Amino acid sequence: MVTISRTDLARSTREIIEQVRKGETIMVQSYGEDQIVLLDAIDYRLLKAAAAVFDDAPGGHPDAMKEALRRYLAKDISLAKAAELLGTNRFELMERFDRLGIPIRMPQRPSKKPDKKRTWRCRSFPPRHNACRYRHDRSE
Image (cartoon, rainbow, N blue to C red; front, side, top):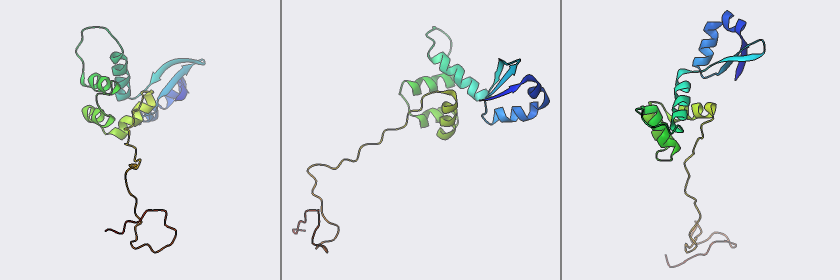
């Protein structure tokens, strides 16, 4: 997060807005105290949706962003599916989640442990070397 003064904001508003639109979060200070935070509109909506997911208040109509985020955090859908529902790609969504501190769940790959019953064979048959660590089955 970048911190600037109110004077800097007044002098270079256009450049600062461009930085924010590119994903930079900017804190504006006055006399050493934090005054406001500037962040991208989609980041703001994601934060608002994340807060609403954890809010137990009844009523209200769930919007698409809140519903996608709720389903993702409940592990009902993958990151890619959440990105699809939000109209973006998973890499951009991962970048936004990382910036906002929303947990990123990576898919679990199945372990590739070999079967204990599997018979390993040398690639060359008949073997071209004497000390092969694999069992050779000459019945093939």
